[in-house]
Image (cartoon, rainbow, N blue to C red):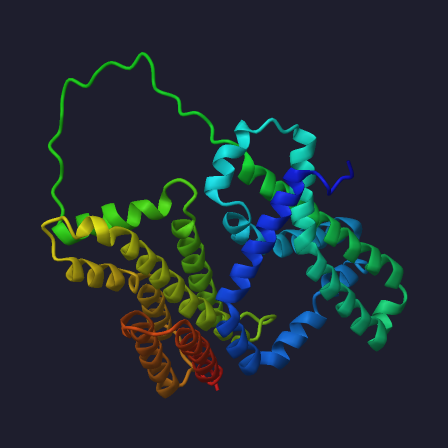
Length: 364
């Protein structure tokens, strides 16, 4: 039996193709709008895909290894985001019960990772072709080493993706109960919280951190990244153009709100059958939860406004317009009812473009 003809490997590949087809269908409307709005920028990013590996060949070996490893980890990040689609929890739950050797599991994970490496390899080939066609002076002396570094980065990405899938398929570790602990002899009364805050904490905050739900970690990383970009935008270091920091801050700010609101909406759909039987006002609870999803982005806007108040040399009119339009965009993303996926994607991309265009004039 050949390597890819085993029924388990065929099953994993078929499952991965089905998941990727579903993911592509869900992003079809967003990709159409994104390509129409920023098609030239996407082509530029594609051309720069092989640049880190080529540039690494001009550095000393410790720095070159760091650049290649960083590029491999960065290009493996999309598979980490797609791991739940490629290996759903229901499938991962019964995998440990199958009589499959470890080598076969690794081959299946490597085959699924290789399925995703095919478009990445084509993108690398197109980017290398662009750079070899341009043939700049700095590349002529290190072209073979740069191509080898790019191929090494691709192989490391493949290995990282295979490891991510293997860790996803591992059974959960058994929980350990504490032994030898004396029973509590004194109980403190529970601290009372406002009812709305209590329900939001129990029904929306805690589920985003339990098991393999990555929404809490995702939102935390997006908030930290957006706050860091805002601080860089206000600081304006010499080696980083201010419009680039503004573009990153605007994109992360809108993405933070969009992803948070989508997660809250999905949680509301899951909770509606149970909430319908509770003595609660369901619509009010849903509105409150969606308003809470605005708080991270509003805190970033408040950080931006507080930083502007302590700095000088900026246009006050542009700052007020940015803050006003940013708040309106966040409210529109969360508050507009009944938007289709295509309309929501258009609103998100249009908000990012408008905020970036306005923010580029802040220091002029």
